[in-house]
Length: 265
Image 1 (cartoon, rainbow, N blue to C red):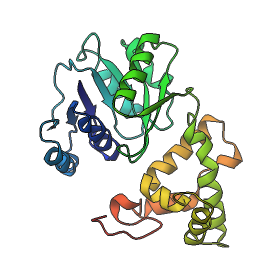
Image 2 (image 1 turned 135 degrees about the vertical axis):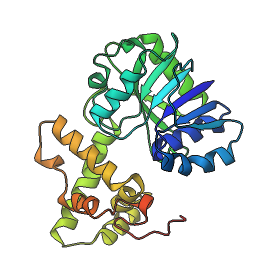
Image 3 (image 1 turned 60 degrees about the vertical axis):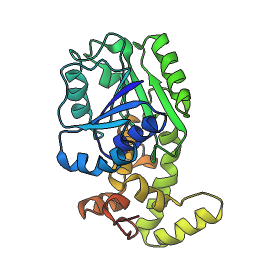
Image 4 (image 1 turned 180 degrees about the horizontal axis):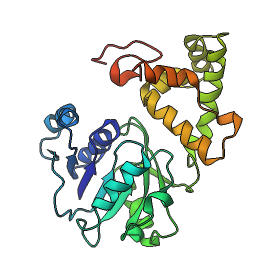
């Protein structure tokens, strides 16, 4: 199997490792050399299965082309449109979006019948669940191929509706938002909230989990769900998260979020 991944950020690298660990041949593209340098460790780990490139090829005759660029509608649409004259006739094109409308991303694409969402969760190599989000234009056989392919690499795919937040992020919003409300009031600290939730059996408290996901990513998903549901108060984004983002404290990936981290972690 040949897989081409666009975007060598946290999710792109994680998804590349998922496929490479199952002996697929993966090309990981990013125009930014900094992102490719961060991905070099994957090449060292899977030298026969991952290649890095800073150039988008003219032809992409791969089994799957997966877009994993930042969670911005217009950026993703631009990238997906660039693929129109490059992909093979049987290539499945997927977007790894956390909350954007897959139907919205599909608008104007000439290959809409072969396009759908695959939402991997961070860290992709360890999280088995993948939400599969077909549109009304996606061919049924492409959806079935997606489910079969994801099962073949050890994932647990679930069909999700193209609604704000899909399934998991829609359900998970109160876990983050209510914790942030308490912390905003100053009555209880993030550390205490995490200890309480972990004491109840949650593997990670909400603030540790936000740091792992990326506070900026988590905030953006909340923003998308809030907007998509027409601004309900219960999903209102947090000024505390916005403050962390403005300060550059976006979580583990930079060594600082709600907690401090050794960058070697």
